[in-house]
Image (cartoon, rainbow, N blue to C red):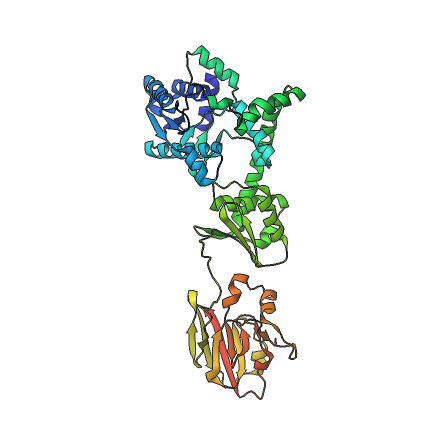
Length: 469
């Protein structure tokens, strides 16, 4: 075991940094602390023990851990957490609340002592149990790959978790403790089958061993194989993410929808999961909401929404997938009104809109019909009007219709035009419209009304330009 740990440390650990060692006092963590002490020396280590606040024996156990660490010259940090209260507060099981409380404590100790990682005592038996637990809950490849020897710390991605004992069995650890005179604390809760892991350990695995006596070794082998495939797919996902990520704020991000749709279903699903994980690193990402979001994003529609884990919302637009938290304010790069109140458009003159957009208007004295007809700039319009003083900028009204240029007077709802023109649903309510006398003339950036067509007999022609400063 000693050589295994030394080889592991040489492969994953930098000798110039300190290492926080999570010590519950049980066989696994005590053997790990002893092995790391032999390999690295006391000066490189800091023992960390968390009292979970649910057993009467917790205080004396913490003192045993402290005394053991001190006897080897290792500094020890002891903390306390009310895990039952945390479970009630967050709606977690006691197991999950204990896990998160421990990692938060380890992160605090790591930052306090200048460490970049914490060593935890998960062994080969724990790996098998974890794989089965994830399988029963419905895991993908990432879950079936089991725990990794080196991984980001939950809720603290700037720190790492290392698992030196991950390939060492529980029986090997017990033997090591006996051979080295170690007296671990025995946690009676490890026999309590009300905990999911204990039911898997004491009930399910012995039953599966009746079907295959090598079940533990087969599951570990499967995890190694799956982990290799998962690593490859993670590389592909990271590369795709770099090409799809359009923008990102503190509580939102945007992916290019068209590029996302061109990818394989495997990468599409992984990118949805990654988006949630970026905004909510601690969220438990289950299959059903991700699959629902995947199905919606495949439709040829915009304005759809999907609820994702961790309070993340997916907003689907024609060319973008927006992932937001509840408090997020999404960026606006297109023209918008401040509110629904009409604004007079002076001729000549201008109207300033939010986010640096402006509309300028001037009378076109003798416009060339050829130039007007050949105008291909969607942000420039020539309008025939009857009253220069009646022009205004406003959003569309409920049920309002327009007679698009070229349809010979046939009208259509402005809402349908906006959908057809792929104006994002969140921007439609305040999209600017040039109107006169209650009648729309120009849906800015998109279509003109037939009644504003410039002809040879037009007496008043206005040139309006919309642009970003």
